[in-house]
Amino acid sequence: MANRINREQVQHVAELAKLEFTDTQLDALTPQLDDIIGLFESLSEVDTTGVEPTSSVTDQINVMRDDVADNWGQSAALLKNAPDAERGYIKVPAIIDESED
Amino acid sequence: MDYLKQDLASLHADLVAKKYSAKELTQQTFANIKATDPQVDAFLHLNEDEALAQADQIDAAGISEDQPLAGIPMALKDNLVTKNVTTTAGSKILGNFKPVYDATVVQKLANAQMISVGKTNLDEFAMGSSTENSAFKTTKNAWDHTKVPGGSSGGSAAAVAAGMVPATLGSDTGGSIRQPASFNGVVGMKPTYGRVSRWGLIAFGSSLDAIGPMTRTVKDNALMLSAIAGHDQHDLTSSDKAVPNYAADLTAATSVKGLRIGLPKEFLGDGIADDVKQAILAAADTYRKLGATVDEVSLPHNKYGVAAYYIIASSEASSNLQRFDGIRYGYRAQDVKNLEDVYVKSRSEGFGEEVKRRIMLGTFSLSAGFYDAYFLKAARVRTVILNDFKAILKDHDFIMGPVTPTTAFGIGEEITDPMTMYMNDILTIPVNLAGLPGLSLPAGFSKGLPIGMQLIGRPFDESTLYQAGYAFEQNTEFHTKVPTLGGHN
Image (cartoon, rainbow over all chains, first blue to last red; front, side, top):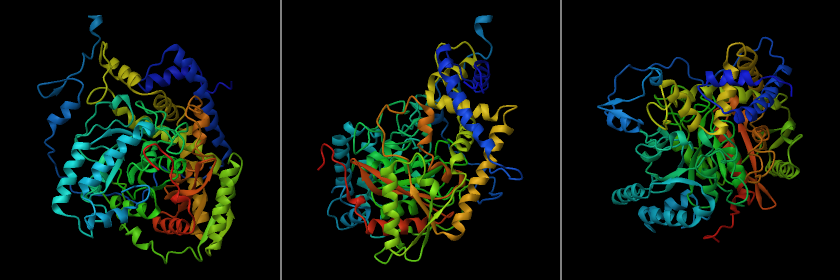
């Protein structure tokens, strides 16, 4: 294995992405990512000296519109989608770890 | 009625002549879906009550000749949000999500009075080429239930191919309309980037995503695109160019005489199966016989498309999918101690394996120290690929080639090997990178499975692709072949 990415780096990227993997998952994922990053490295064969990057191909530039507020009146429907809600607010667990109190 | 025998124009004529009502047509559609879908598994959700109520309203108002789509059933890929109707994107993380608005394309089809009968299966968040990445079910190829339908719009393709609905919408980020269309022997259009509003399409790769129709014939597809295309103030990348009446140009007089077609040698090179190659060479001969010129051309950087795409699309996906955090909607993990746990556990339990793999690839490509070498390099290679297409399309009216390297592969055959799965899209991905329109249509069969042909055009020149596709259809019989299914034939 060429080792373009190792287990510790995969773990670091997972933390950035707010994902967690078990040891077994990491064992499978690390060589898969390494293979795919190997494919990514084939891009170094393309000479891109002086080539501008393309981030979008849209033909629209600086589209303007009036800044008008629009009341959708759907807060009840929106809250229904929340996993937990109370008195018109979305409810989440404590931000600080309760077990450490 | 039989959707494997009738096109949209003939259904419309029957509805106007009151041969049957929109309600009868809708009832027949549900009866047909219930008989057929247990074998195909194309649908995630059916809206029977709402559809029948809508049909009643349409019948009460009457259908006139200037409403070509009114009263005709269709289905939507389940990554298009539908007001009050569960929209999952094929993911456990959105298993119980009920959007509060309709996507622009859904509104437009409702304005045209089409009847939405349900939502179709897809690879989770449209990431995949086989529909096996759905968290809910595996859709089968309409022609052979041991084969994949392709993906990610596998449900939309199989539903049309099996005659359950005459038209569906799909989405295409790297081939997700064209590849399943090819595997199922139907017509699929990925329009020019910006031709159709993306508002209400659950975002995957925002600079690549396109919504388009999947139908049994080219003309049906053209009718559908005219209905969904156009500028939308909710999608600032949508184009304000006028929308042509694409179907009006498709008549007995439609011809490819005098057109110049480019056939890239890379599209018939290594890795392309012989049966696919032979079908495309035969199609080139058909075009020559019809008076077009077919030249060998070159897309020298085509082989770098997959690498550039998996960097760009995964980077955009890793950003777009940050919103799924277990707070405002969707799945929230239980057994959490703090807010950080909600994010990490909800995402880790809610997303499937392939989606997590792409988020990881994207996060890596954008991370400090790797951004220049990966993301920025891919964005520069994207320019190079775009320039290859521009050079050919300067003096060619369109490009032709296969859609996929092989016909449909077996269920379970490639799902454990991401790299092999990614290579399925080597012929479709570059078209998304360049933002060009791409049409997939039936062009042959091998061992009972359909082979698709891809036509790639200039930006906003869907018209030429439809005309060339229509001319091909008028002179071949591939589009008249239908699969053998229980409950049919």
